[in-house]
Every structure is written in C-alpha cells, then in structure tokens.
Image 1: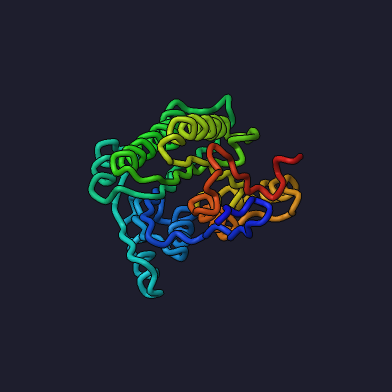
Image 2: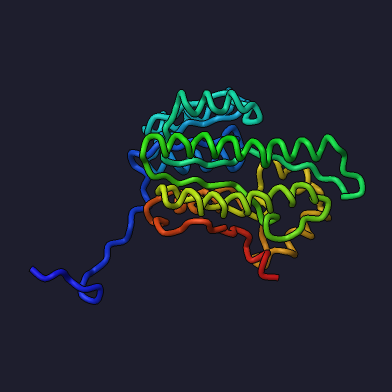
Length: 262
C-alpha cells in the first residue's frame, strides 16, 4: 500500500503524559521544586525529591501517596556536596527527567556585594547545577535512554535585576550552560531546556515581595499586571519533560507575563 503523504495523513497530538518515566527534582522541599515534583507525579512519573529539608519532602510524598499517584521518594541531599550528589544519583537513577531547581538569591547592591555572597551564589546556582546535571546525564547515557533535563533559570537570565547582580550573572550562566548542554547531549537523545519565571509567590521570594514598594514596582514591570503562582510554572515544566516537546532543545521558556517584552 502507498504511504500516505504529509497532506493526507491525519496527525495525532503528542502525549503530555509522563507515565513510566522517572524524574529527579532538586530543591524539592518547597516552592517551585515542590510544585513541579507534584506536577510530574500528576502526569504519571515516579519522582525522587531531593533537598536538605527531609520532613517537608516526606509530607509531599505522603500527599502524593494519599492521592494514589505513582510512587515518590524523598532523599536528604545537599547539592553542593558533589560526592553526595553522585552517590544519590547512582543509587536512585537512572532517570528520564531532571528538574535542576536548587538555587538561591542574595539581594545586595553591587557596590556592597560581599565575597561570601558571591561564593554562595556561584556554589549553589552554578557549580551544584553542573554537578547534578552531569551526574544525571551520565546515568542517561550509560543506560542508553533518552531524557529531558530542565534547568531552572529566571527572567534574570535575560534581563538585569537591581540589587541582584550576582544572581543575574548566575542565571545568565545557566542560560549558557543550557545551550551548551543541548548541543552536546542532543545527539544522545537528551533534550536540555530552561524555565525562566518572573517573580513567583514562593517562600524564597516572600521577604522581598512583602515590601510594598518593591511589590508595586514588580507589578508595574509585568504587562499582565500580576505576580506568578507556582501553578503558572507547573504546566510548563510538564510540557518540556513530555513527548509534546520532543523537538524543543536548547530553548528558554519565559514565564514572565510579558516582562521581557518591555
């Protein structure tokens, strides 16, 4: 029989499901990491949550179990401990999906940035992200399985942040890392992309967003006129991890309400 041409073949929408996949989420005890771990589980993935706050993650695991979702596990992990990262990934991997989320911010005017702040931001936001991504990617390659790696960047990977010079620098580094990883790992069937949220209401952003002047300035910078909620990022993460994003590699998905349009 003749093969239908692209004009006569009726396409089928690729799946947004993650059934049968295993996901590793760092910084999973709260905020975006916790929310996206839940999103992955709701999409059918088995999830390993990793962070330093074990009790908080165990509550999330119990919540997922109570809903009859795929098995989830919580692992205490300091991602700045390279040996510990490699051990945990070896023990619980290989994985199909990584959310490389662990990170922090220290707000200081550039002229007042402390040496310790630079060290802390580079160590967690860049060095640890490299260590985690490398360990998970090696596991994917050794197991000969394709995968999706999602690096948690920020709108500050694209535009400057006042009093956030080193954080901004670290997220620009994540943007470059994402593209370089995508170029190298793409031929091995591993897609690498970045999520770039604007201000999201999380425990990390709560102190600064509690400042009425800062909050108002942030709202004025976002054309949609509102701050983000974790739910705004959950769907985007599932999309990038799923077969629906099969040809997306080396991209930065901005979840910024139009902030970078201005």
